[in-house]
Length: 232
Image 1 (cartoon, rainbow, N blue to C red):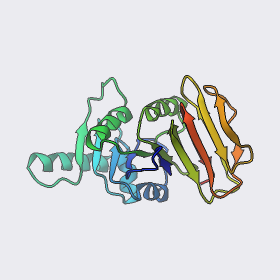
Image 2: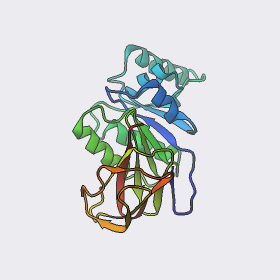
Image 3: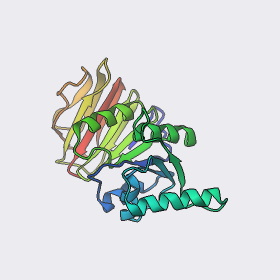
């Protein structure tokens, strides 16, 4: 769980990306628990349909959704035009836009749910360029980011944020600094611990640690880092 320096945490907004290698239905349902809203980014709508999870907002150009998904988007748009109750809101983008669907969806989340942390899934799909771009986008979100996939959970931690990790003994844990100035970080309950260590940008110092205590904890005292717990 990611908390700010005061220990406060609002209910997150789940953003379901359009990865061609989507998370399992079980992972999607787990990610959706406790969320105040669920946003489908283009093909992410198909993942929600398959998992039986309701969508609150569709964002995208609808260029990669299935026929069923596209039909649901059209039905929601038609209901809205007719003044009726739509299954979900729709914000369509021009397919020749300058920004990514994820970037535009995050802007919509910021406008509709100010101050909410983001929980994200179905974002990478085995593409390293997409993975780096996703990290870049998530790193700019100021209210806390959780990332849930089949094989891992991740967090983006900014200054004053911490992740308390429970029931994870023996699992692999890694972090990488992604701010230009590096990070100041502490780790507790792990095989190799750190105490206010200064770690430079993209250092491999935090790679492949092991959780040894319950709970374990990573704290970001300065900068921005992304961290992952593997073997979910």
